[in-house]
Image (cartoon, rainbow, N blue to C red; front, side):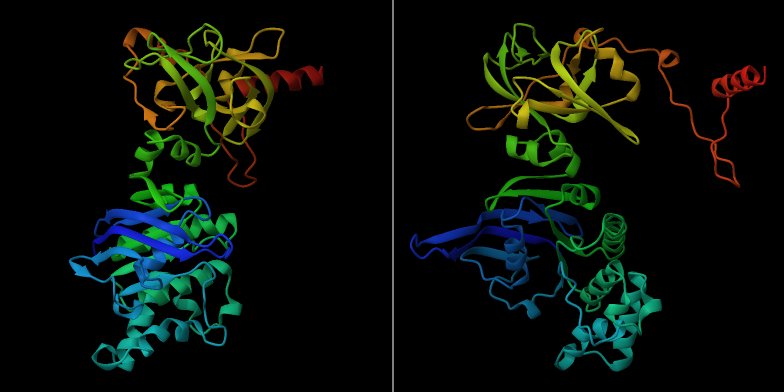
Length: 421
């Protein structure tokens, strides 16, 4: 079911009676959600994403604008006539009812010809339970279920009447980290199996980027950018989008372009930016856009190095960095850390990846595109044979302890002989 929002606006009376007037929660929202897609409404708290969802569901009436499901204008229809399934953050399950009774509840409230027979209701409830893999818990009550299982019941209850549109309002916020990961994968699987157009509201960018076909980044009730998650991440239209997407966040610098080269303090260019006229700019660099390198020209003071499993973070400062305390965070390969460090000092130098560096107008904060870096300016590739590799892990099938091999085994044998001698 395609959903079209045309100039959708919602204003609420200002709670501050002294100021009077209205607060605009959704401002001239105008876009189309393709049929059968999972779309994420993403933004900080108070940006209007939940209000937009309530307008689509019919729980709120728009001040202006229209809502279409396919070719049908549903702007004036009540929620029960729109054919939507709603899943809330707090599950909203009836504690005195079993899982089966909770799932059956929407069907039992249907009237007239829409109400199926008892046998059909049971069949639909079991089908929905199987879809979310909770059929083994049909006779339990919500208090006997984990948070993840309760959320699955809520999803099954929303799916049981086969809605045209599924609306999820921050459904994972009350789950711990492991359950959030598991449940979001379940939501994606269910959406693909059913093909129902789904709108997923979240403030968690990782959730939105991992399961959504499209994301809508919102700020102050207005859409900032709509696109595929990776496209929005790689080509943010403004500084807000660049700063909001990505963990860790981008590092923002005061910069200047002279003769198609980017300068961040000093008189040594840090990056070629073909096609950009001479002007002041704001540069935003993704954490993975910093590469420690002795030939790099962005000089920083090394604060510390954090090794967290697969990621190695370099925390450094630069007086032109606009982040808090002038601090930037770079995610680098472990083998590269020493390549940019100046011997006998705490200075580290970086070269920048052009595709991870974004330029913005300091006043409008809109993105300034620049061309590809000429081939001659690119760093010579290191032959595959010369690259450092990390040894794989071979666990013992019984003890699960690591089995050394190769150079590591030879060094271990030498150490044993030394001690025996």
